[in-house]
Image 1 (cartoon, rainbow, N blue to C red):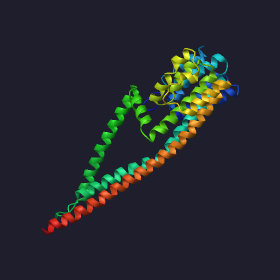
Image 2: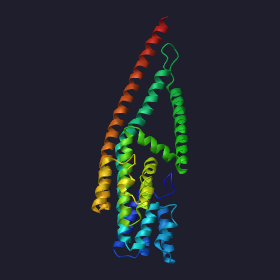
Image 3: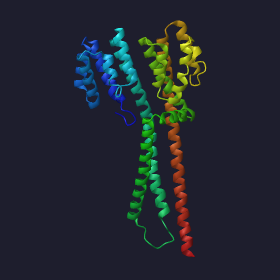
Image 4: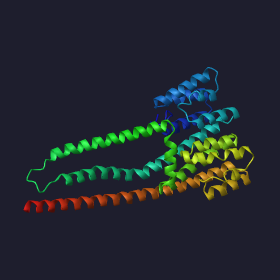
Length: 342
């Protein structure tokens, strides 16, 4: 489970869905598939969820009912699609699609972490080394004959870092509590969508997730309004989700998707054009996949740009700190010499 949610983490859902899809495709009944995968599962919570679902199905319940009882740990979309696949006799297709969907989501996350790891490490190193050097320069007194105690300075520096870590931990705890209460997402979603260069990345990743989920749900045969609601929730950005959900009333009144999303502030021109093509051609799910791929490629490019901007910004920041340290050192040094002469 993650800190901000009780649901199973993405890296656990990916192999779980893939193993279930493979077992069911091989002709193993779903009860035995659940037992087989639970026996191979390393995550304790996932193993418990699968075993409980297996027991529920063995007792005569449906897979959909068993999944609904585990909503605290399973994503809403997974629960919905398992029910749709079971009812429509397309459980094998739904399991394969879910496995691919979560693999795509995990790949998005990995690309983000891979691109931002180096800038974050640079920022952490700049913080610790910069604060150490700045504190050292400020504590050197060249006008005094008293010997400088490096041990005392180390002690004060460690106390300073401990206080900083406590502040960071308090801020992180507040963020987690707000996220669990559902309040943090809207604020962060609006900020991420408004601040360059994060805005380009946030918009494209959110749209990639939305259209990938929308394509999967449309292919499952769910009503369009439910597809929009669940795909918007899966976008990962509360601001984007609120904007996209506004299309639902128009769809319920009989409007086309192009008309329903006409007032959207977050859809790109390319997305609008491809929605029109998909509706006109009758291959909406295929077109939505293409829109998702396009925005994923755009998000990957925006991520590379963000990583470069972050590296440049951190390099400039480090340069400024070094310059300030050098100036402070020589100012302190020559000022101390002048004071000792006087």
